[in-house]
Length: 324
Length: 267
Image (cartoon, rainbow over all chains, first blue to last red; front, side, top):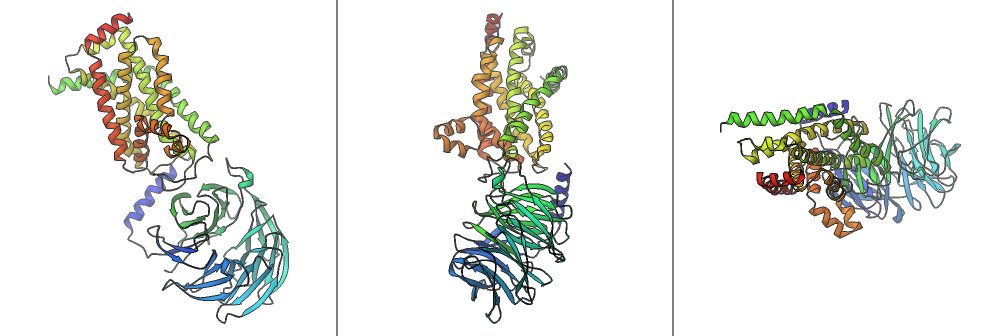
């Protein structure tokens, strides 16, 4: 009931406030070779753009002027100019790029090359390959800490997090986690890193100062077989309150108290939920649902899924441009 | 006849129905047990069944509990209407129905008032059920609770008229078991109350068409769409149309001659 009252109050507030600036969400559709653009105000797809083959990981440049797209089957990273929505350039990426992360210096792009068991570091302004770092078998997830000190790569088969010093491009520590680690997300203060292990069904919380695991989480979605609970995407709110974990084929997103690591709720979204992103004022969370081919929107205040929007086939990644 | 006569009669019939309800308070509670069992126990087992397709009026994936809640609202009215039919057979056997029909006011007015009186009790139960459903996270928009009121009134009139029609043709109280088997269960199971019709169509097209011809399906859809603040003219139209047809047949069936004949046979 309390939630209902809050919702009415919220609806009234929305009704009273005028239209806000539109902010766009970009979704890579792995099987359609397209990018869907969603207006976060109207929550509708406003444009679909052809991009390279098998687009998966996508990210924004730090100045929000460009979108980098891993075109996995083209073995390249495409650069889209967000003002014109045109592909303006490509970067060397090594073979089969799937996930990548951009250093806060807005120059160094860390790309994991699954087939070659390496991480390629590319300077996006000069297109020079700065380093190729040997990591475990089938590197997958990639993250750079907001303070720029660490780049972390996850290797699926070795089940490790490889901690790369961003000054020397050397691995300083390997941390064994659950089977098939997929994704790493740093807290905004760079003190904690969250890593998901898809097959292990676990999420590992790492203290960045000591590079030690401080907690391991498991999930139990009511009414869903345990082997379908496969954590992948992670998103943390900047106030340090919540963590959202996409639980893959369980079709649920776990809402976690980021301080106590307690699961607060499981929210039903589309089939095989993969990646997540928060909108600019962190009121809504967008999830890509690969098998059902849609994006679900979660209202953070209500902790409720409010809508699912059809996009292309097998949506993989989602990023929301806070400035557009 | 003055309007005050109609009002007096209206209040009288409503009061009698409420008195009867008040004397059977346990029936009110037990009538809630049935839909709550479906919601809490049955739906829990089928929790993961849905979430594969988004169907109007829903805008995203829903749990099975959310899906069947409107169907269970319909179920409450359906069972109550048939219970009402039973009580009319009872009334007739005891002669109190004849007392009611001796009123000089038009018979259709008396009968529709009786149906409305029975409907008010059902609708009260529906609202209590929806409040309890909040506990299992069935949370429709707040205005939805108001928006379903016309659908609930229409549904209770339609099913009440059906009950009245059945009461006309039932010769003895003992025959009521047949109503359960031949009316309540088929109406409930062959509708969109428990499963979306596209699912039914995948399993068997002819079963799908039976569900489409079942007026209860459209009553449930009118409740479902209203609860989520969507307008479904087809569901409303069909429910209203069927209500009129059933009400005409039912009031015609309650001509005193027929009542006397049936009454004498029952006696």
